[in-house]
Image 1 (cartoon, one colour):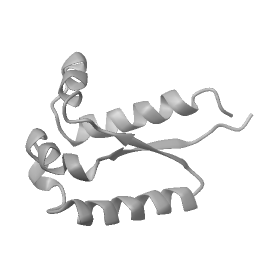
Image 2: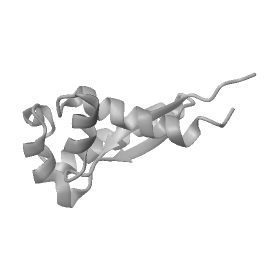
Image 3: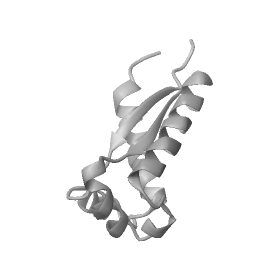
Length: 97
């Protein structure tokens, strides 16, 4: 039976960009502006879809993400963002095949 390959991408809202950058311990590694980040993220999303993946945009809310990380004993960093996004994709697509 074929399996579904779904990938989550951490996604942000323009109005949250400043809060996101200051929240993440590695926020200095993010793009300088929301516009730059969005262009890169949309390019990645397009590339993944072209490769046959289902892609889920996992919006990170700066007011709730710290608690999500704390519940899992995670730093608020790129590893946590990736885990959050992939968990969102898993929950959305886990029953599809």
